[in-house]
Length: 288
Image 1 (tube, rainbow, N blue to C red):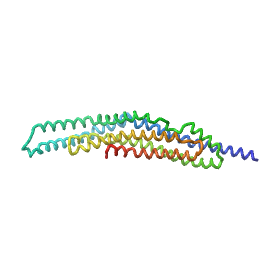
Image 2: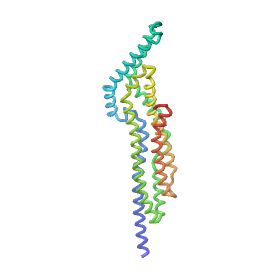
Image 3: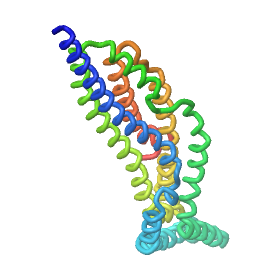
Image 4: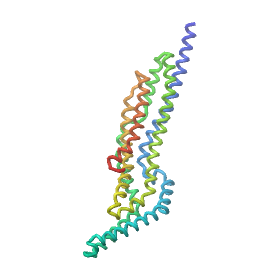
């Protein structure tokens, strides 16, 4: 009778261990792959990330937004010419060189909006170079290693049926949590790229304000915002590097429950810091 109960207990243990490992291994792989893709995704320029979307955004911007920017530039150029002429004692002390000054300012403004996409791409090329150079900071894998998973399975074999049943039920909660976090990471990374495309589509309008002393702050803030979006990718790489170090420090050889919740906690921390990168980049570059 005792041997039959032992056999049933062993069968239940094997079933529960298999279920626990099946629940956790799949979700670990999903989160690990999503985190591992961050480095390559944030290092892409808008043109490389999705050539089809970028081509559409460029065509819409050049056919719809650029004419509006041309009207704004025309108004600003006329206003600046009037201001330059009347600011010298109401034409009592008029100097002809200010006309050449106005021509030069207008020429620069026209050149800017005519090459706005080249300027935007130059910003993201610089940022991509910084991100690719910093990619080497991820010295460790962001994955829960095979040796850690093997150690977790070996530790589970030492537990009783009651403990394994509790861990099995908890694995469903952890599985759901990590799946949600994986989706949130996807939304953050791809949401940044959508924001970049939206900012790029309006590029001609803020760049058309550089011909005005009063309105040039709009263009300057736009460029700061572009650099903030670009360097947000650098901050995301830093977050992933920290996450990699933290994940590799987790040991599954003693406290399985604590280790599992440690993985969840570090992943939640990663998501939280990813949310903060955009605001931090704008704060550093004084973009708003």
